[in-house]
Image 1 (cartoon, rainbow, N blue to C red):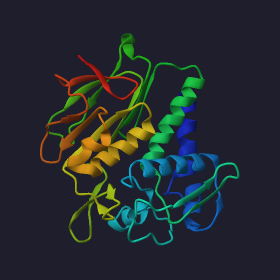
Image 2 (image 1 turned 90 degrees about the vertical axis):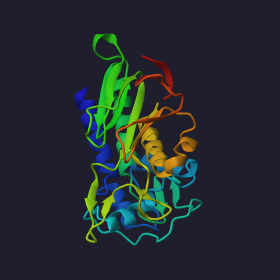
Image 3 (image 1 turned 60 degrees about the vertical axis):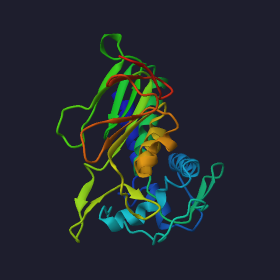
Length: 282
């Protein structure tokens, strides 16, 4: 089972990493504006990113790579220039899966969604191998399938981004994924002395100004949990509109209290099922 997981993550990292100049993604970025043959995994990653871009109305936009590098999170890989302004109706991708050819109008970053896809592909590999009960965790994102110890649901704690308390909530997971967008880890001080973080707002091309320190979203699929967590973080006070009733937990930047979206539980322990929605309270 572990070999299946490692193989899935290594394949995803090789195909989708912007930190490796030899990766299929870096080669595609270097040829932005030119049709290029891409690997099957990269084609799948681009297709999901395009769908996330369209369904989020441009709130999710992988073309923020130039702004991310300008903010200070540099990969050390040469890139063509990125656009100064992103439009939510841009047709930035042309993809022909049958021929394996793709063309992007500007370099893209598939980091967050790539992590979600790696979890998806690892979970699919375990299912094909006949493994039915497992929990995968990668950088704060989680996929839970089947049951945990003592044949009970998998149990995870919601971290307090400020570190003032050990846990803000306890969540029981049943065949569901969780993803978190937060600004407490990938955060640094720029040369101007101002704080920067990696969550770039496509509307401003700068690190997002959000009331949230972290947003955690439940979804049946880890890649879409990743997308929704980022989109909800960027939406700020309008997060509920983009979550459409889905179970989510948001921690304000100025407190250690957790807010919930979707059906509001009576307590802190929520049972989240396959649809990514709460269906009970422990």
